[in-house]
Amino acid sequence: MTDLAALQERLREAGFAFVPAAAMRPLLAARGALGDWPLFAASWEDLGLDTYMADGGRYRKRRFGVFGADAEGRLWRKPHQPHFQSRDYNPLNGGIERWFLPVKDEIATSAAMQGILGFSHALFQGLAPPVRQWHIEVHQFRIEAQGESAGKPTPEGLHRDGVDFVLVLMIRRENVDQGETAIHGLGGERLGTFTLSAPLDAALVDDARVYHGVTPVVPIDPARPAFRDVLVVTFRRDGPLA
Image (cartoon, rainbow, N blue to C red):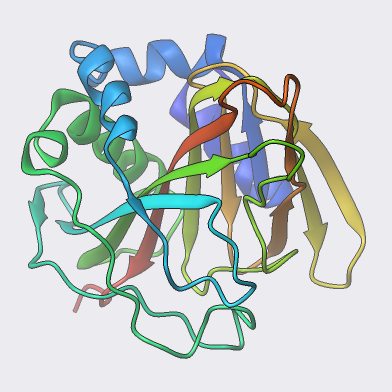
């Protein structure tokens, strides 16, 4: 799966794809996304605590941003707004407006972010009927495993996000074990499992066709900081072409 056409075919056939870093790297490099990667990855050190966790957990940090894109791939940032999911899609934390710290301007405009969004647009635009505009949400997530306690990347369990397509891109894993991604069909059957372990490992999901979830991460050495950093990008149709 070293080009867009191969990835699109995989998604059409299976509804999901695991793309190892060795395959993602040239795809993102072609979009200029790796030029300022160290600065981009370092921004995960400055996220805010997610205070909306209905399970009382304090293991998740995040920043959130919203973008738009037209059919030709022109991108723009939308005004900061809350993240909302219905309880149909997120029975744990859905049903309310959740306001998170915004993605910093220098990260939103970075070559890395713009390249990732450009790659995602090219991939997903080729899978959908002609789309006039896309509504794009980006989430910088850090899941911490503290002491003997596990961190939950998807505390709501197997789920769909209520969008069209999802990209999950590994940024960094530090001193954690597990965190296996599982993909299930709409009937509950398991379709595949894999673990995002190396920076630039990626999962691609056709959200209408499959459920996805990630097992908790646990510290390897409980005395040291332990965390899993990912970027989640969701694309939702914002209107068909006339």
